[in-house]
Amino acid sequence: MRVLTHNMLSSNIKGVTNGFPLGIEVEKVIEKQVDFNPDFLKNMFLKIEWKALVDASRSLGYAELPEEAPESSVIDSDDFLRKFHHALLELHLEEGALVCPQTGRKFPVNKGIPNMLLHEDEV
Image (cartoon, rainbow, N blue to C red; front, side, top):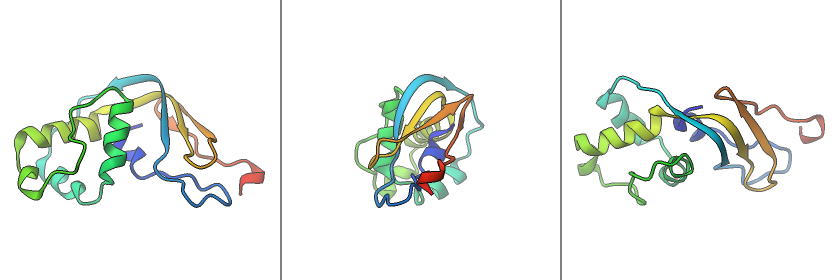
């Protein structure tokens, strides 16, 4: 599961009002190379929840992103875009779990696929 995917997931358990961002428990992380596309990255930057991205990438062992979202002038920097690209698209949670921040419910991630199915009593 890419960090990009993590940035778009939340817990939908009945009664949960704060299901984003999901915590990450890591068992195995892999890196997969992806073609670098600056235009895609610049468009995605506006849609990303920055703090969730930074926390997720740090959970996966990557600490190269700045704590605060950079200003628009930095977004055009090749150095920044390459770091953003790596965190967003090349880091993959292969095995582990996503954790609801409100309930602590764990959603397993196996072979890079998060299982977000809810139990009957959670719907």
